Amino acid sequence: WGRVGTGTNGSVRTLTKFADGIAVGGDFTIINMFDRIGHSFVRENKLDEYTIFSPYSEQLNVSSSSAATLIPIVYANTKFDGHLHIGGRFNHPNYDDNVGLGYFQLDPQNNTTEFIGYNVQLADSQTVYCMREFDGHLFFGGDFQSLGFASYIGSIGADDYPNPEVNPVGSSINGPVHALEIFQDQLYAGGNFSRSDTDTVYQTNIARWNGADWEIVGLGLNGPVYALHTFNDQLMAGGAFTASDSLEMLGIASWDGLEWAPVGTGFTDSADTVFSMATYDDTLYVGGRFDSAGNVYVQNVAKLVSSDWSNLGEGIRGPVYVMEEYRGRLYFGGLFTKADESVSYTHLTLPTTPY
Image (cartoon, rainbow, N blue to C red; front, side):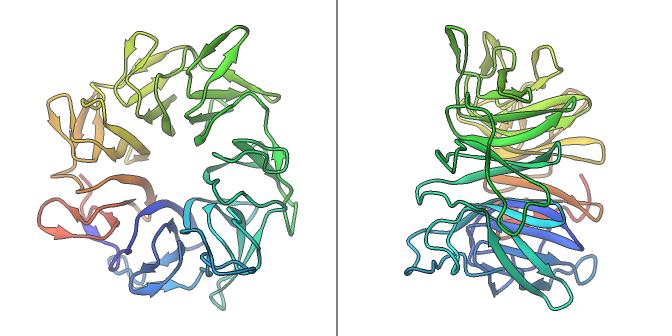
């Protein structure tokens, strides 16, 4: 394991490759000893040195009307239409209240940033959790209601600037959306919601977009879905569920387009939760808050070998919320201070040698 600079003083919730570095979001106020509120852009000096952090960040804790009442947190960032878009719950000096959505106009030559919000703002109690480009639009999900005409999930179109218009995306999802992913050329949403089909209501927590509204996906999963990831021609769902209908699936399940199936033993304890998934070196990696997969000790991070779960050394001492491959390595972000037993980290790390 290797530390990325000196890390952050708060959790890391999102990592995205952008331009020549990684955009980092979370609820921190310091990263590598620089003051950065909730978001920063990391560049490597050399392969093993992370001492240059460009100032792609603004004061996301101050509104135009008064001192901020929100504790800023960025849950999602992604590249769309040439810009770096972010979502979460935060203020900005150019806006009155919780902005929650917007994009950066980056000037790499001068290391400057201009943040621009969408055409509507979130209520102070509401949050954006995820973003995903699909079919020429940027979709985003969260726990918001009546954001313009969008509830729980919305979208913006390309080339709609400077203040992109938020569009509704169906009306049948009735709870928070935490994850978005593309599988078999269709958009899937995971979260903590139900979806009705005629007179029957399934606690599905996962739905598929048909171009007009959301469809149920099999009989769904019996608990919240926090991560979706396409791997080996299957859609992987991770979260805090234990079954699909009567079939046991502990924290992780796969969908082949027709039916749900367990993935290995899953994660043993009923309180275990999967928050993130990534493909690295043709292998599925999973991060979250868990201790074991069957009889294998896998503290908060594991990889799938054939159909069995394997550990990464002694694991990571705290929840793993996000993973991202960059320059041949897999980066981990979360709320942790140690990887393995002997080296301390602060919420942002990577293996020095791939496991």
